[in-house]
Length: 172
Image 1 (cartoon, rainbow, N blue to C red):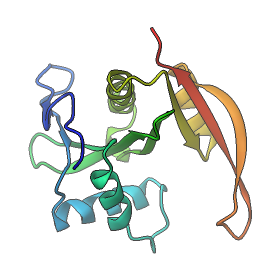
Image 2 (image 1 turned 45 degrees about the vertical axis):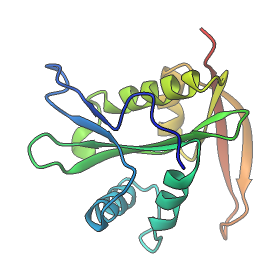
Image 3 (image 1 turned 30 degrees about the horizontal axis):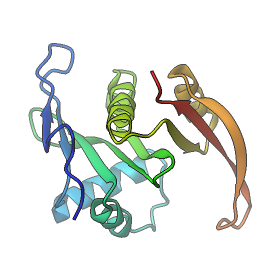
Image 4 (image 1 turned 135 degrees about the vertical axis):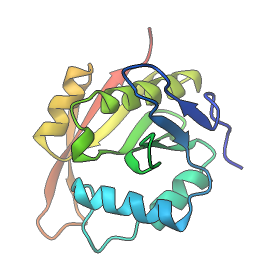
């Protein structure tokens, strides 16, 4: 049974800057949710068009220490941002942070990362890590206080690709 979110299942932002954006911990995604997340991940380059996201989503939701957070537009409930966070008992991790192009630059990515940090800090972890695949992502996380720690080779690709791992202390 997944652990309950310390922030509740529905985290609506009713501030003027958030314009009613609804953040939701998705525990039982519908087929429409899965299709919307898949389209977002493909459009943002997180996954290739041939990848099925259902297994990744189910694994996160079923994990005792995983959370899938989505952001929905206030008018039509369209999913326009996602983030998975969880931990392995030692380190917290962020996965699948994706923001639709029309919403990039508005601060939702920064807010989702901050939420992940809060969730993992409450879980008693002292460090969060992220695997990045491109320079833009590295720059984004560096601005949020993440430091580069190592490169790892993605052996699943035909052309081995160097991903980078970054980390941030959660100790305040």
